Length: 445
Image 1 (cartoon, helix red, strand yellow):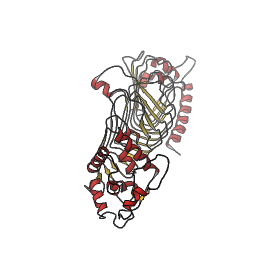
Image 2 (cartoon, rainbow, N blue to C red; image 1 turned 90 degrees about the vertical axis):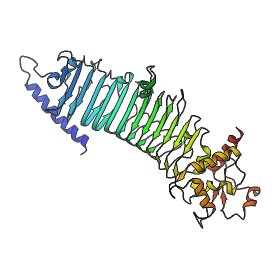
Image 3 (cartoon, rainbow, N blue to C red; image 1 turned 30 degrees about the vertical axis):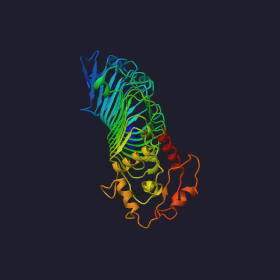
């Protein structure tokens, strides 16, 4: 029996007992019962409180009854903490139109049903073993701040946050999420028009020290905001998993462990203002050669990353014109997809235009192999040419391609001067074909 099922069974039992006790407490004199303010700390008074703090110290059971809703109609700030079980009216607190801030903390389970707090502007959930979040219902018109800390969410369902919410900040801090469904977080950030550091701290979606196992296509959309994903693990990102539209501010991926992904798993559609892209200190299990963020015309830093696997030829030649790629460490072995491009100038001298050749040389000098340690890609190229590395291996060499649609054999003009070359056999892949086309376009521009 799961934790959630145990809580539901306990809830049914407690509600049955509570209903019986409540019926027995009401006699001919009329309803008699305790107010919510007899259980919780209400301020400034128990008649029209503005703040209510329900911290379960004496009992782990908190039941908010229908008759309590009148008292809570004036509340602006509500805290629910350290309770083993919380029961709220099935219709939510519909009369609490002033309730803008809710804090939930230190619970094993909390189920937020759509429409629970209809005028909510800020929700903070901390130290909750399992959060079930159905969506915000009417509060999608008012929600501005959403903070989850040290909390587990098995699934964020479609429509959890909609584009109607006038968001300022969404923060996941040490949060574990199994799955983000398509359309779950459709976030639109609305600026208050402030400037400086205050503005920089708002209008953004931040994930830090968290684990997200799966993000479906269209799972996260950020409109008119910035994105920061820091020191987190993202296991599986579908195509179009995270889309930044009309980006305002920077997009930063730092210190993460990134698993399966495609070139457009993380993408920026449009930009507003002087935003930039920073991708640094990440571990890529598989780095897409066509990663969209690295083909942007925005200033981009790709620095200090560890890459297990990448098709190095289209990756290096596909980097955007203003991308600075330095101090990254790639797997250097005898797999042609990863390192055969290093021999390009030796096998096809004069193939690259001077500007492209100069940039290619800088990339080889500024980036490294994971093993041998402290060996640049240029240094590993020298080991390959001298047959110190991959000695005896039939290392094929990928020529930058000439067409984006077909696979073609080398022409006799290209192959003839190299027939006696001991470097290896040349082959052309469809991915490589697109690369030469890109190189020639770059050289023309």
